[in-house]
Length: 231
Image (cartoon, rainbow, N blue to C red; front, side, top):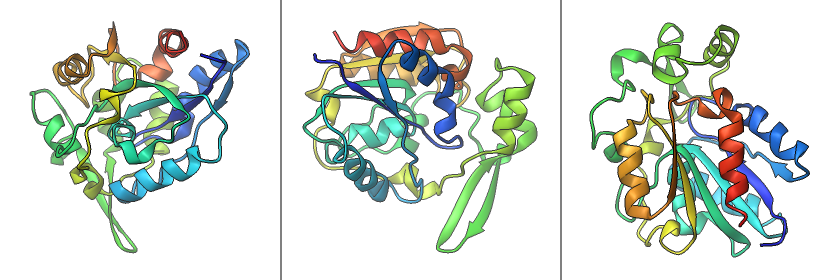
């Protein structure tokens, strides 16, 4: 593969800054990196947004998804022909007819439960946050104290309808090579769910003892997996 642009797509509850340490390592190695911001309002609109964004970029592209963004990039309609590979970082690998909500409930262990969430109205819908006092345990237990506080304070909320979205076509990972970083201490998407999804997708898997915030806590591991997707 010619030297690609790495497109780093954040998931729910954090924005593109979750990639800052991974981005620095990729850029220091001489690679082009861009990290768009998903609206997180409707699944279909996130798919359309990412497709439109990717259409502005020359290829080749390696698309990297964290958390909910894995559902988005699994939808073939979200990608352009310039995409050559996918990397799922503690992410959903959704298939036709599935939803992120159902996949997250397939195995026990997720702490994304009602008692840990706050729902606030916004014009046109509702949006979900983690309770600040629960953020560390659910999302970033192994992050530094400053990171945990900053992440909890600067959450990017999601409309819960995004987790109920599905698509009809066979997932993109059926035809594109994929890699998966599995966080074994994840309390948001259970590790067993991550393993199951990566296994059926035939992804090249790297496991790391980390929380859902693996891109911040283990940026070297994540960057190495992304670089490996260029081979």
